[in-house]
Length: 243
Image 1 (cartoon, helix red, strand yellow):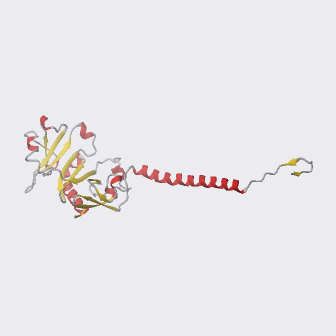
Image 2 (tube, one colour; image 1 turned 135 degrees about the horizontal axis):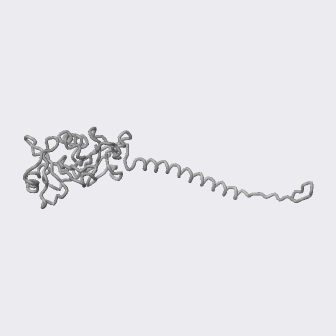
Image 3 (cartoon, helix red, strand yellow; image 1 turned 30 degrees about the vertical axis):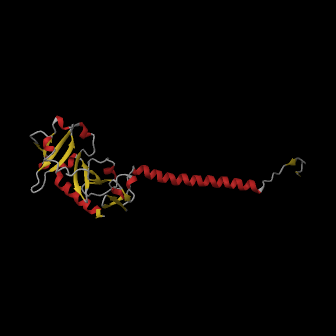
């Protein structure tokens, strides 16, 4: 006890060392939590802003059957598939006409915020059919379409499916290719097409027993020759070897 001039007692309370350490630990823990929240916020914010895309151009090696496909991660559509390894299927997407994956500069195109529809979607898997879409035209599709077609864009002919075909709300687009099987693509029609980002589809045989299905906007049908050639060429770059 100490006394002032007026002799009133004043209490002086002393804190032991253990208590001071507990206070220090509490403040240190709060600081670490604050840092963790800040870091997590940065990563979460970037993830939300990317909307599932990535601008990472490093490559992943994907093995499908006897094929090794080396694809830039910004071209691989789903985050879970952006790891090297064995897979049953690989989904890619790229912008027409440069056939490149996602980038900050092309984000409006990949988020479908631009005026043009120019994103292609590719799915690569082992073949389950002996013929690709062109090869199925003569033995199968000719039995399912109406006898007479209608001239369409890019020198194509539009065929409507019969009611018994099972292809409701779809049309078949074909073109003759000298010395080859016809070009063939199926497209959604009417309201179904209006609601789809890539209403047209074509599959081709590639690699060692692989099937490549690519979907594309209806607006690109007029460029079907260049589009088909670009898809084949792009896959040729991605396919590195057959095991």
